Length: 210
Image 1 (cartoon, rainbow, N blue to C red):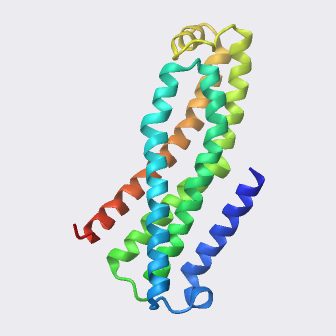
Image 2 (image 1 turned 90 degrees about the vertical axis):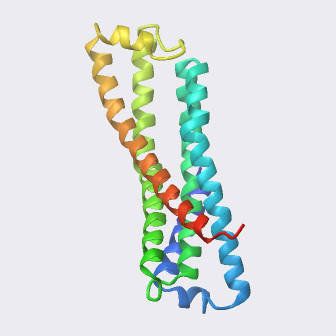
Image 3 (image 1 turned 120 degrees about the vertical axis):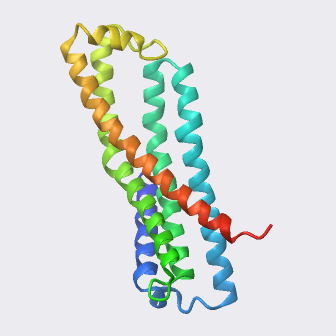
C-alpha cells in the first residue's frame, strides 16, 4: 500500500491547499471549464465513496461474516479494509478540494459551509480509520486468532464457539473485550463518515432538476 499512501497524502495536501488558498493553486473558479471539471470530480468522487461505504458497511461485510469461516473472514477483511479506507479517503479529499474550489470559504453561504464541514468530517473519520483504528484492529485480530487457534476454534461460521469458550477462558474473554473496543471505535468512525456523506447526498439531491 506504499504507493496508495503516497497518493493519498498528495491528494490530502492538495485538498488542504484548495481549501485555504484556492486562488494560488487553481486561479479563479469562475471559468466554465474549471467549474465543470470541479463538478465532475466532486460528483464522481462522492458517488464512489458513497457506494463503497454503502456496500462495505451494510452489504458485503455482513454477507461474508455470515458465510465464511471466521478466521478466513477476518484475514480477508484485514486486506480489504486498508484498501477501502484509502479509496474513500482519497475520494473524500478530492470532494473537499472540488467543493472548496466551487464554493470558497470567504464567499460561501452558511449551507455551503455546513456541507464542506460534512465532507471534512467524512475525510477525518476515514483518515482516522486508515491510520489509527484499522491497524490497531488488525493487530488485535491477529493476537486473538492465535489464542483461538490454540483453543481449536475459529474455523466455524459466526461467534458461537468463541462466546462459549470465552465464558471459561479469561484470556480469550479479555482479548474479546479489547478487540470489541477498538473495533467499535473503527465502526463508529465509519458510521460517522457514512452519515456525513448521507447529509451531503441530501444537499446534492436538492440541486438536481429532473
